[in-house]
Image 1 (cartoon, rainbow, N blue to C red):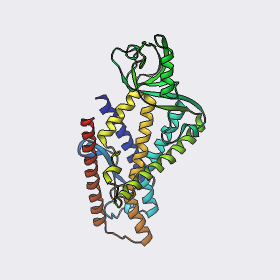
Image 2: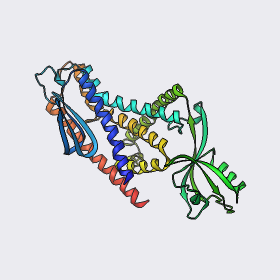
Image 3: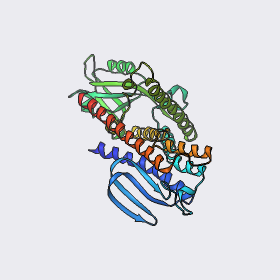
Image 4: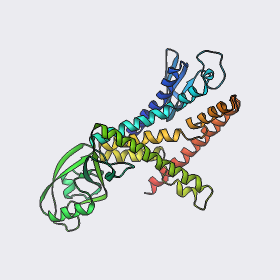
Amino acid sequence: MFTFILSVFILGILIFCHEAGHFLAARLFGVKVEEFAFGFPPTLWKKKKGETEYKINLIPLGGYVRLLGEEDKVKDPRSYSNLKGRKKIIIITAGVVVNIALAWFLFALGYMFGMPPVALSPESLDGEKTGQIIVVAVEPGSAAEKAGITEGDIINGFKSMEEFAQFTAQHRGQDVTLSIDGATGAHNVTAQLSHDEEAPLGVGLGGAGTKVKLGFFSAFVAATQEICAFTKLIASFLWKIITSLFGPEKVGDSVKDVTGPVGIFTLTGQAVKMGGIFILQWIAILSLNFGLINILPFPALDGGKAIFIMLDGIARRKVIKEEVEGLIHMIGFILLIILILAITYKDIAVLITS
């Protein structure tokens, strides 16, 4: 239940920040904001403050800001329809900018406290480095369980699982002190290893990594590099999906790693088990994904809306009627909902069979 609440809270933060970007940009250019909504209808709560009605809706899969004159031309000096194309694009893309800026700040904060790189290699970064291994299973009655080590904990100080195995083998039957990062924070535990030749600590390990801790300015430089490297990964992944539409590879093979709300809840649960820094890192990853997806040139997304604005700017007239453009965005929105439902079905199926 806690994981579900935390997941909704995280999504709520990202959606709020995104829509706040649109809201603030619109206010900057003097556009009247008629509605600021979190989630999609039906409406659970609403309150009008000043000229804007604020809403919390039932379905927490997005949000929207409704501007005066956004859908139809309105003869009002504060109408969105009266703005020039450049200002419209700034308003449309402001949400994406805020999401990317949030990810940048959180990545930098993570590096200040110390975290494993996401899209970068530890070798490419300077700073204090600490090897880490991940606990994926704890045997009942084992030395690890007695010491309070749980699934998802991070054991610090080891560069590889082989190094850790060698360490525990050398100290069978002895008390050892281990540095742990987990759901309760960073702490040390003392475990009395058994004489078992295969697993003296009694844990299953799921991989190794390196935590990197940087100074203030270096952290923001590394965060910038993370944003660039992660964006390249996303672009490469999307290109793979597009090319699979016209090649021998099946689209399903390309999108098998795509996850939806259920997958986000699952991964949030894993981040909770691994500790606060991984929750911070996970929020940064989600925020960056949220921003990059929204800038795609697809109807109903911010990138799709920006394309229509640029077409009008190039032609110096309204290329497509408002009614037709609205219909195109509606179709795009329906297709996105269908895609989310399909991905959710896939995530549930994987969860059931795993």
